[in-house]
Amino acid sequence: MSEEKWKLETISVHGGHDPRDDSNSRAVPIHQTTSYVFENVDHAAKLFDLQEAGHIYSRISNRTTEVLENRLALMDGGSGALVVSSGQAAIATAVLNITRSGQNIVSSSHLYGGTHTLFQHTLAKMGIDVRFVDPREPENFAREVDDNTRCMYLETIPNPRNSVADFQAISEIAHDNEIPLMVDGTVTTPYLFHAFKHGVDIVIYSLTKFMAGHGNSLGGAIVDSGNFDWDNGKFPEMTEGDPSYHGISYWETFGDTAFVTKARTQYLRDMGPCISPFNSFLIMQGVETLTLRMERQCENAFKVSRWLEEQPQISWVNYPGLESHPEHELAKKYFNAYGAILSFGVKGGFNEGKKLINSVKMISHLANIGDARTLIIHPASTTHRQLSDDDRKRAGVTDDLIRMSVGLEHPDDIIEDLKGGLCAIR
Ligand SMILES: Cc1ncc(COP(=O)(O)O)c(C=O)c1O
Image 1 (cartoon, helix red, strand yellow):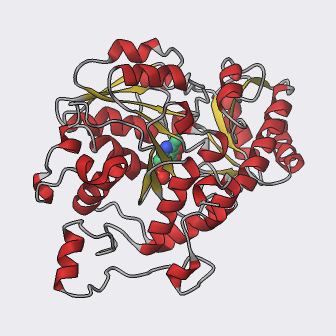
Image 2 (cartoon, rainbow, N blue to C red):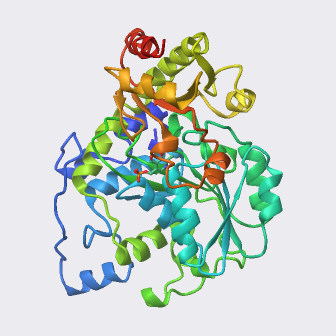
């Protein structure tokens, strides 16, 4: 059976790696090398001309990272993937790959704080305008598009807003305007969401979170569906010759992997946000248990959110798996499970919430999600602190919002720790 036909569980442990290509090593070896030896001068020239596939220098590609890239592409059913040093590097690279000064993108306002600042400030300095819209109403995306719009962007389950958008409807609007839909699938992973079956063209991950899963390595990925037709006149950087690469046309030469090949050969070459092979190795260890971890962490998050809903000191709980969640029906339609991120408010607002965060013992108070351990944070004063009050409101990060990323501990122990925190409020 071909790898493409395997189920996600099988791809997660075997995909993209034939031991015969690595000295029969069962585990994928760490190729801790900067450079690769050429067979001769002609071979070197062919590699530099992209006429022959092969590694040159680990800023651009590396054998360990290549296996991770192939595995990620298979997990999503995509045509190719590019792995970089962090989720932020993946987002910046993906957007810059098809935008330039004077152009714009339409993005959901429900975003991780770092993405919001990248879009609002750093891209603005490069002359790229980002138009933020409430993603719960697909028409909002249509209203902001013009001839210079080059993509639509949203997070599958936004961190920490947990809203759910109508992906199919938004992708239709994007495609009617001949632009791709790009999503950040960090919170859902391929376990929860089959992005390419719902009209998404490019999916981006912070591998740092659930994919790696153990809070020990940063990484990011761009996975291309291979479905978008770049030859529609709007993307000359894909179809016309690249003067920085002796006139190559990515679309003509690489077809359905044009997007990731361009990102690799231009942005990894010029900006250098490459991942260490050691991190690729560690992330692959995490990917091997992704499905098991996600299944258990989603179950735990559901149990904890149900328990929180019943506590008199809690004013609200936001988890897409709860029937009280406003987009619960959309979450049911699009996702296999509801994720491991929940948020809630404590009666009395953040002053009371602070007491809870300061009192939990086992749960870690830190700025990350997707660890095997349960994590807690107050986003308004940390991850979303750099946003203005209005932008924070638009991102859905209220002052009383406390975010939890639920881990693999026994749910009774997570609840017991939270009970201790709630006692401090009493
Ligand atoms: C949804 C989402 N996307 C992207 C990122 C950025 O990822 P990284 O920290 O790997 O750069 C984060 C980080 O928290 C995130 O939560």
